[in-house]
Length: 112
Image 1 (cartoon, rainbow, N blue to C red):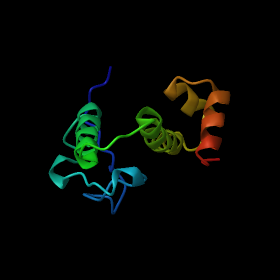
Image 2 (cartoon, one colour):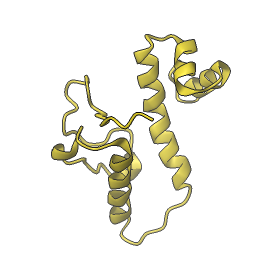
Image 3 (cartoon, helix red, strand yellow):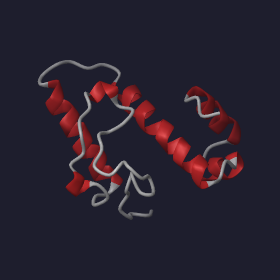
């Protein structure tokens, strides 16, 4: 398994130190600029979830798994599709998905 550091904003001008986009439920929480690109994806998710729970301040939440998966899946699919220059067969192979399943997910997220 590849354990390289994941930089979610690599090659994306203007996103350095920006707020997490596409996460309206998280109330515009930001990732401190000093941690962008310096931690593995697992640690970044862990930190984001801790901030989310701190922000809840004892409140209740339901369907957290579905919310997080929806927020992560769309940019993952978009990034892989961009990397493969729109080649859905290659993208499906990279993701370990059936091409039909990939197309279904791309449609769900309005990516095709």
